[in-house]
Length: 87
Image 1 (tube, helix red, strand yellow):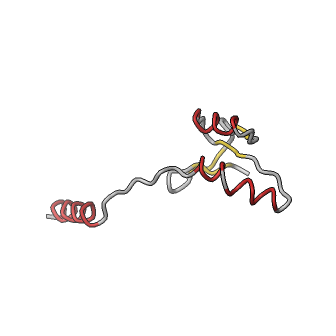
Image 2: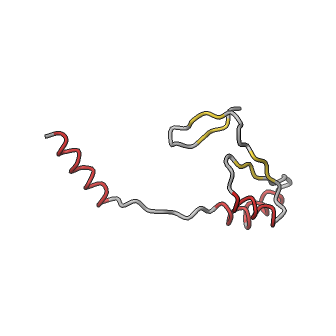
Image 3: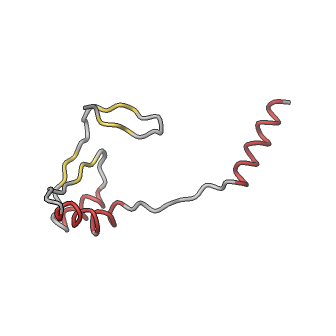
């Protein structure tokens, strides 16, 4: 019986709260507001990439935005599936 209840709840949740896909805002943020805001406040703007993203790398190179690859850097696995860099 508990298996049926779990199934019913899972179906209800999928119907009531459908999964939505949100576009990745990274390129838009890098291209518009963030660099302007950062440099206007006397700081330097650069991007750290935790994984290889060829499209983003090309975008950063085209805009001459400094970036660093953090592939292979130690990290803490996050509870949400994200990686958190090891200090």
